[in-house]
Picture 1 (cartoon, one colour):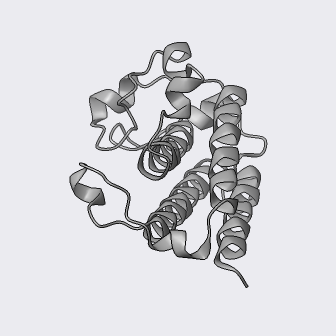
Picture 2 (cartoon, rainbow, N blue to C red):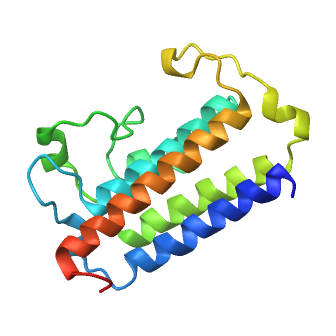
Length: 172
């Protein structure tokens, strides 16, 4: 199996599981938090898409984020620099979840860019180390970046499933 295929199939599996985890949820369930210091499903969905956008758009492609290009930051009145990372309880409380249809549109555009980029890579490209001044990304290769993104998406899928289960019970 080629590494491209492994990564693409993992993205597809995550997307399918996420679709099931979000199926039938109402806005109140997307916005619900088990405590004032916890994330909601809607916030988590937005955050994981932002993370993928930043990694692929900026780190890998060295370009503009889809969040900026497609004006989601303007539409949702969220600062371009915001990704949800290290949000405190006041920021979580103030966060307004964008409409799920728009979140899905943004996520689809990010995923399309990710997969187009992935399928354009040669095997040797996975060893490339893009230039970055971000302290946490020093030494990251394209291969390591994909591993990180898939790990983050998997973790957040687990968060979303857990929050759904807290609200609806097991497998509901």
